[in-house]
Amino acid sequence: MHVIIVGGGVIGLGIAWRSLARGVQVTVVDPEPASQASRVAAGMLTPVTEANYGEDALLRLGITSRDRYPSFVAELEEVSGRDTAYRRDGTLQVALDADDLAVLEELRRFQESLGLTAETLTGRECRRREPMLAPSARGGLFAPDDGSVDPRRLSAALLAAVDRLGGTLIRDRAAEVLTDRDRAVGVRLAGGDAVHADQVVLAAGPWSHELKGLPPDAVPPVRPVKGQVVRLRAPFPFLSGTVRGLVRGSSVYLVPRADGELVIGATQEEMGYDTTVTAGGVWELLRDAHELVPGVTELAFAEVTAGLRPGSPDNAPVLGPSALPGLLLATGHFRNGILLTPVTADAMADTIATGETPEVIRPFAPGRFRD
Ligand code: FAD
Image 1 (tube, protein in one colour):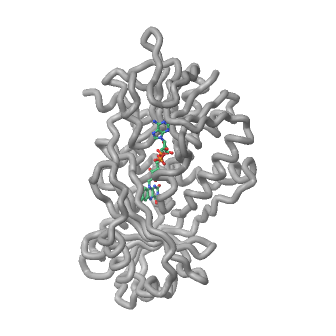
Image 2 (cartoon, helix red, strand yellow):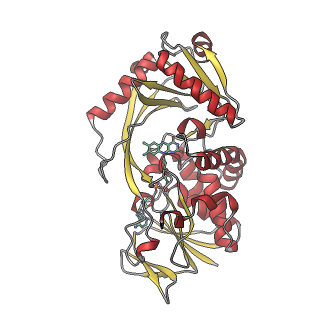
Image 3 (cartoon, protein in one colour):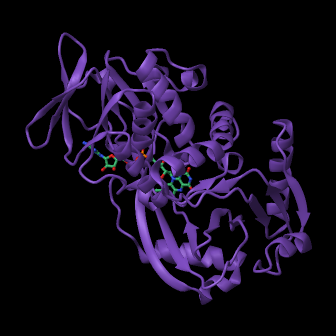
């Protein structure tokens, strides 16, 4: 069994590694692996605070994936010899006013109804946990099972694992899916060469719908959703875990890393494929972060980046066999692609190796949009 994976972000690389581990021959095609959303992302592993009401199936998938993270990264770090900066130190959702407190109370009830652990904290308890928080913090909700990972280190570890297990990486763009008797049989590269395989997986983020040669009902319904992120650098551990808050109705988060990096995100903009970083975006992020944690403005400015989330019509990923036999889709992970990497990688690798789609990803089949 030989599979071509188009796209080497966390999703394509995750599937590549797990497929190699199942004895499948793998070729990844990407002009610049891990250069897009997977490089920009903050790396929060927070299924509940990211889910909207009504997205129950997505929430369950997120929780499953979050709970697989410890064993996924342990195995990956061993195979690759690289650290992923995974930490399971919880998320503190902070309320700054009475309206926020009401939102938090609703969130707490929602979490409780799902049987999830969440601790309600007073403003003082929040500050005891995170001394850098604004004195105006009125209360908070602490989700101890959440965590974070550094997506850049995760991607580098996945690339190393794919290499160690004998995967092939072709640094070119796939321009077209090749078909023979109504079945995907490979891809044509932008450079003109054809590469053949038994199956093709499209994991090219918001570009997944651009390849030529696809029948209309096999084209994934993905679009780019721009997000800007600011990276600061602290000389000491600035926060003990991820802090999130609502400031004037807009959500802001701060994700600390052990090496002193602090990631502040993220804007959400429907701007097509534009990835310009704007003064307004940076201002909005720093303004909101400063209200939650005033000391951020003392830190060194490291970087600002913009990336494109692969959005789908229902905010959930598009996973599994497409309408074109031999072509599988793994895209549309929107705001949760880092979180969903373990569950996507395992379920897609099982589908590739056995031809059977595991139960856990069936609600996310590409066919759900056809009607
Ligand atoms: P990408 O990382 O975009 O990778 C797609 C790859 O396909 C790229 O390497 C590209 O070069 C390649 N490609 C494109 N076209 C072709 C082609 N024709 N041929 C070959 N290769 C091609 N998720 C979380 O879980 N937690 C977070 O905290 C989080 N924060 C985020 C913050 C921001 C600002 C953004 C933008 C995203 C965030 N996300 C987060 C979402 C997450 O980054 C994405 O869902 C995830 O990275 C998607 O991974 P991917 O591999 O599908 O896409």
